[in-house]
Image 1: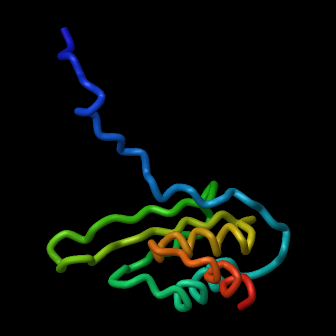
Image 2: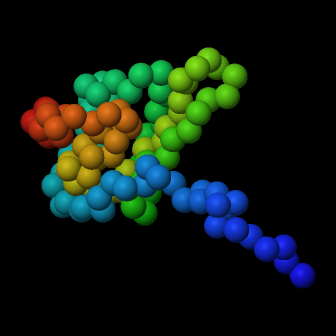
Image 3: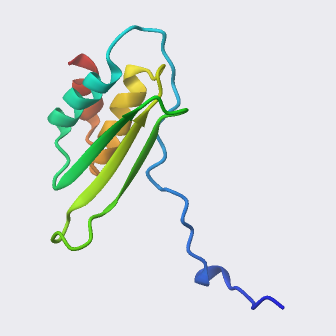
Length: 110
């Protein structure tokens, strides 16, 4: 018999950062280079970011780096081959944790 589980004892492990839009584009551009430039502009503090090309859909995962000081984080940005500039910009802005209204404009204009 399974023990009774109360809802407040269940931890939802679904990724909270998995909110980037799944927009596609046929525009020919280097998506990983665009993501690198966007990361340089946003510069997420104390975060090491890995860029993964060829994913099935846009995905952002991140977490804490244990044992490397307070606030150190890791992140993975998975970019599909047909991702739009807007989808990449939103995913990168999400890594900043405190996206400001002008971030998306700056990323898309660069």
